Length: 438
Image (cartoon, rainbow, N blue to C red):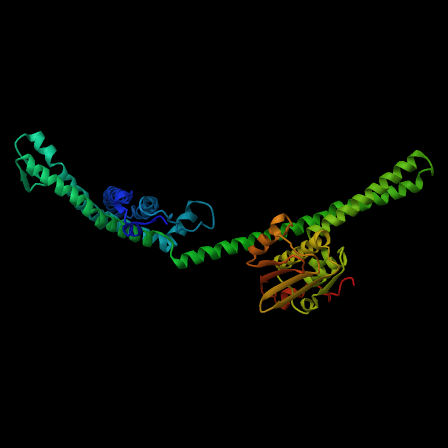
């Protein structure tokens, strides 16, 4: 395994033959340059801050410097440094600044910027001068003597007057360059570890970020379900009613047309086509969001799906009818998972019988769909369950398929969810689900 940090590289026998000594030197050299520039910038902004003008600029400079330092970490750490900042809840500069000012990561970046501008960059420069500058100065002794012609004062302390002395100084410089590569890389690793500790998200911030992602996904699911219901309602109350009126008008026109003539024949065809379109529209509306699911809940909706299955299905979901309603997104996801499973059973399993069981216990909805078919079901072969698994995962749930060759097959959906309060569920009528076809 290739080393990913200077600390790991130091333990490798081929450390000196790789790029890590140069990486460490480059990281310290760039740190000295960035720190010196930051010190000059902070000095200027400090004067303005006396007039309370530079305080926001100081904060912004800390954020900018944090971004630069996270990018600079790539020199010595192969693992990318994640950004610790959250996405503002609202657009605009004011919302962005309020979010940044309230984050601990912003103030850690500011503290690191002050530390870099005052303490760290001189230490980087000192380590670089000792680890690289001193050996290079000794290595250049023969060149300095050749340029002067008589003598050369190496490192301002060692007087060289002959080429044997200059060669000895160069050999000492080469030995020091090799020996000091190890502590130089260690210093670079320590600096990088300090930067990562202050400039990357902490565990609590990562958990907060994950929580925000989960919450946003849940909001997207709720919005998606609301949009599905709006489309279903618009089709039901708009296009379907117009088609019903058109079918009735064509039926009345057939009564007024002379029987046996071409007009009656054309009206009969139009009437049949309108009836077929109305039937297909009703099936489409039912597929978008069945009315039985919206009105009565998951148990009766599963029983209705079982009644329409090509394979005889027994349902055991009566317990759901005795409980308050579940969240709409949960009921919808479980219902469509059950429908997809029944469709796959009818198309691919060769089963003689299937069974649906639904329970809500300990804050978890569990839906099992079993069949006695040939087994060997594979979601990766395009059964439609992969998309359902993604949809259930958004709700922090799981979809599991156990289908050994020869059967039987069991599809299990588990979604953690609380039942809604009785007051919130009282507006929705409930019925007790019954068994499907025998």
